[in-house]
Length: 214
Ligand SMILES: C[S@@+](CC[C@H](N)C(=O)[O-])C[C@H]1O[C@@H](n2cnc3c(N)ncnc32)[C@H](O)[C@@H]1O
Image 1 (cartoon, rainbow, N blue to C red):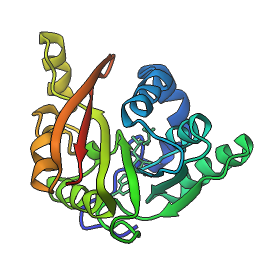
Image 2: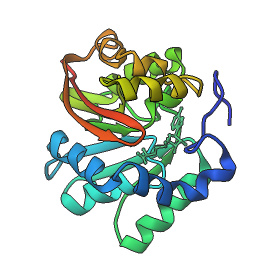
Image 3: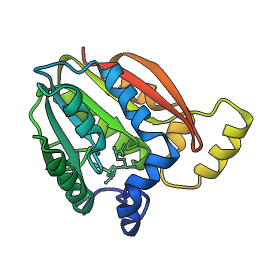
Image 4: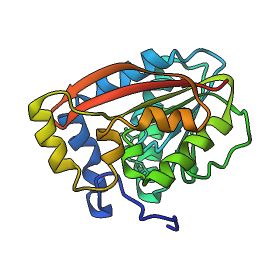
């Protein structure tokens, strides 16, 4: 894999990828977390939806099951996790396209999606890669299309501050913990950027953010 910055796998190291589903199901109440994003994104029949950093495909599957008339595309840069997603999608008997690619250089034309969704991916990206990813998400959205992000958010409690101090040592989570994602979204051209919801987990708060392509 060739990226400007190190590629961070789903659980930090390629060897752990096969444990991703049981881990995430247990520690963050995955179903409720992802169902809430689908509610907020208001996906409708006829929409084209892109899941950036789709991982093992759980969110893409839930969207397609909820709205069979939507076209759902999942993109991920890790071939091993894409294969896990492919198997889950086949087992569910769903028609979901999986694409190889990086958030910073999306392999899609301008104005080609109604919704872009991305969960637990941005904290894997450096500041420069977050900026590039948001610009790309804006580019591939149609005017009036919406980006829905759910990711690690800034702590609001004393316990959260302590957990954040530990998390800060890993990867590129600092921008998330410092609440910088909304300003990075605005800088990439998104309008009406707002926090739409919040979920408390044992790993700390997860925030839901929405931005509209003008
Ligand atoms: C923590 S997992 C989240 C997976 C899934 N979105 C979820 O919520 O369960 C992060 C995912 O982002 C992918 N990823 C990391 N950097 C990426 C990049 N630059 N472009 C595309 N995918 C990336 C990883 O391969 C991994 O599947």
